[in-house]
Image (cartoon, rainbow, N blue to C red):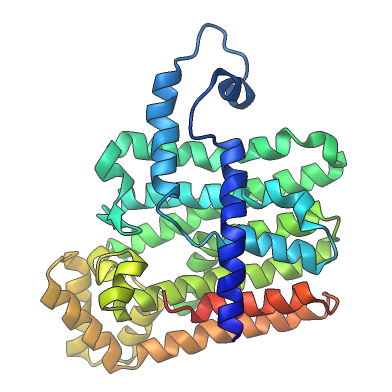
Length: 359
């Protein structure tokens, strides 16, 4: 019942979030939008090039779907600490826009073929457009704060800017660690190092959503840190669950997931399951798994072989338990700071749904 309630809640909120995104990123470029976003031109804007190089790729990507869970997390946190989330709706989309930009660039870096069931953006528009669009989506959301400076105290806005900039820096380090590792250039990765990578690569945008929700709602620093820690744990657990789904989904569920089977094996990713397997496996299995990962193979049988080695050592169960353990510990620390309310109840359900989802 709880899962159905959350799914119903997501279905209701997603169109509202998309509507807010469209408020700042309209589907059709106009002179007014260009002036709002970039300022008055010194010479003259070309509307068509802005449409084709930025807006069309953005909406091609956004229209494919996506869970929009980061803005929903933002809104639930705002409600849970007693703020009317409707007044903060515009700011909830900040991490979501950034997130979609990171995926566009991530697919170029990983040479991804498929995203959300369709060809990766660079396969349609080219790598140059995909990278430039992704970069635009990293920094465009700052305008939402800048254009709303009359709504907040200067010190509140300063905190929001600091959160934004720090998490953007963290994001790049997390992605860099992940790229370096799946190139097969590191012999041993400790579990704690993997967790740190996830905390930055995936956790930082959910942490940004949470901390912005607290700060813009007038919450104190302690609450921002504790709720931010829960959100970071969600991001880490979400990444672990994503890795699990990559090697366990089949058939129709795989199609809904929108990625090619065994994509992480092809990319040579050192997931938590891989690290656990390498620690527990025989020398023969360890050697073979590393060999397949380093080949970046797209051969179905080889990917299947790697997955069978991972499953042989119960690495999937280990990863599932680890994700839940991380989340429970973080929630325990923050729960007492939130008053009992319907929003708090929904927030807790939502948090656990994210790491137990089937797609």
